Image (cartoon, rainbow, N blue to C red; front, side):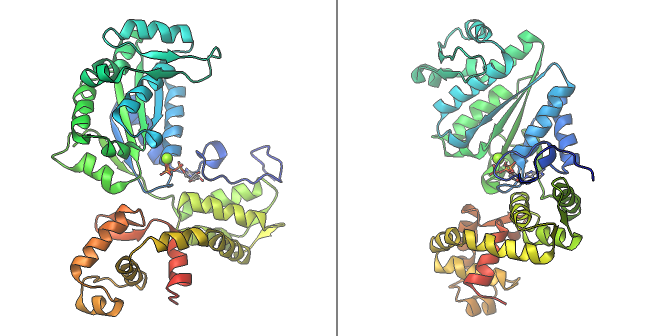
Length: 387
Ligand SMILES: Nc1ncnc2c1ncn2[C@@H]1O[C@H](COP(=O)(O)OP(=O)(O)OP(=O)(O)O)[C@@H](O)[C@H]1O
Ligand SMILES: [Mg+2]
């Protein structure tokens, strides 16, 4: 039996909630090649998908491949998850550019002396070169003139003869900063002049990302190559699931692997989670029945969360979800409004907007779908009891 990895069989071969890498990462060959080629040619890239479809994993994979193949390429990655204002953004950007381009703290100090003339950042360093550095600026000075920070990557790239890719995760958070349009104008006016640096901006709030990048009146309009990440196909999940079971000495029937992909609606995070629960329940051979039990357990485990989620929806929003779940296509027709107790067609539009903003629904060019397949299942079967 071929076992590609050396993990003991008691250790689960599935991973979720972390960056998927090495044997946990499947498929995405085309997307990976596309991103690597954009990085190598310094093409700005915008990557959008709903939550947990694998953006961060894909960018991490492409970044590491691009760095392996190109010794003059440096990737610096920052995550705006916890960054809620411009000041924190500048500190993070500086920190990550310095860390990606200097291997020793002496080099970092050297770079600060060289590239900061107007601004004087305060740096705290650990004596361990692998430890984080932390950067602080005098906010009043930065606010007036952030140029040295926004051009830092380009200046370092020129000086060192390298190419730099700045990857910014959860980029949609900048829409919540004070005066976000002014801030975006600032970023774009600097970044569009960079010749040795490219930007990869990605995030999960499709409607906010779309507004930032596809609205002609916004500064980032046509900033780069816009990619919409798809889910991973069932045809790719099946061999992956089989191989991961096999690597621990267990088997999974094809029908059971298909069932995992179907029940998780090919959603990468949930496929891995459901596969893990199925694997736990498998002695030797995983069958569709094992998967059904694992799925029921997963729905049960998440149901408290789903009760809270549905408690936060209005009656009109729930009525609309019920109509969608029942397969209604003309949601604003008089018959549908009456049947589901929806007040008016304006209410349909309002509820739809709110559900998209709450990340319950995803709108792909007018086609609505549930973002969370397990929540969708729970709503249908446990809450609405639609058969
Ligand atoms: N290529 C892949 N192969 C296998 N599993 C994957 C892959 N990409 C993602 N996953 C699964 O999905 C989970 C979420 O991936 P990741 O964190 O990269 O998504 P994301 O889109 O960045 O999520 P978020 O919107 O929460 O930031 C991973 O922990 C892993 O279980
Ligand atoms: Mg992510």
